Length: 371
Image 1 (cartoon, rainbow, N blue to C red):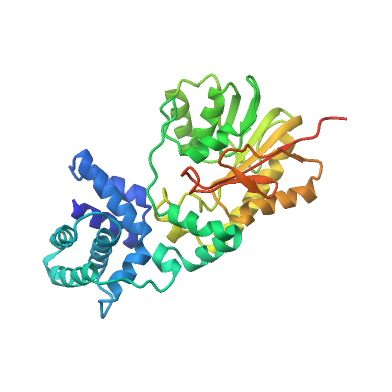
Image 2: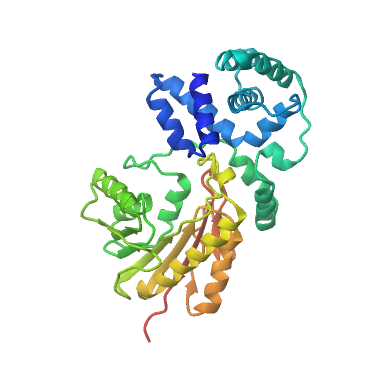
């Protein structure tokens, strides 16, 4: 079992593979039962989240950097010792047995020292296991809420099923619930795949045109729509949200659930904290603004524009609202939906520690009625 975890960790680190894809591939050919597969999943995702913390724990007892397989196993062992309820002797022995014989002496010695030692973390970024720039950014943008947000995203999320069986985080469900629609309204979902919000809105009576620029993702959305029996309510199309081939003024509601840095979903996307770079935020913010600019003309007079992202940076949230306040001062912001949402400029923020859920930002504006 731990051998499967080590092989997955090696693939993720050595080949820069996405954690979910690499793990699924290894589990599919492992022959493990459901219980063991669940444990491997927890160990792999947990080790990835806590990679920086685990490296600190073991590096105190290393003279040189170990080979890749030994490094992966040391991280896995340190994660079990520091962040799970696995008994120390079991964590050490099972991890040692899972590596090649030439590494067992090293692992046994180092992991026993980790198990027996106290820890003095050098800083919060190491203790919480995030890049320093990310900790600094969220502290700047969220203030006192940053610490609890970072803590919350170190814990694996619980799967959430809607009443129709669709698995969707509570944060995304809250966004869909906060989109003001009436039965029969025509809605454009500009960045819709895989279709979670589109299907939730269709279930409330909206007629949804759901777009994504990638054909494969649209295919996934079509499958989800069909599985939920919403073929008559949702039309899935391949379309670029920044240049939609749609008639102006046609839609009662336009939802821009934009591509973003995903810094509010780091508990689910275990490797994202190591993939996202500061420059990505600026690049994505520019794309988000392009999609917003293209979406405004699609809304009928008196209709609504809704913007959401699963991140908490000001560059991707309140900065856009400030830009819109200058670019289109006639847009009227709506009051926040209440509940777990807190005020965030003229919009709302759902912190990951609140429900708990993904961290989400939400802005809603009414287009002025024709004179």
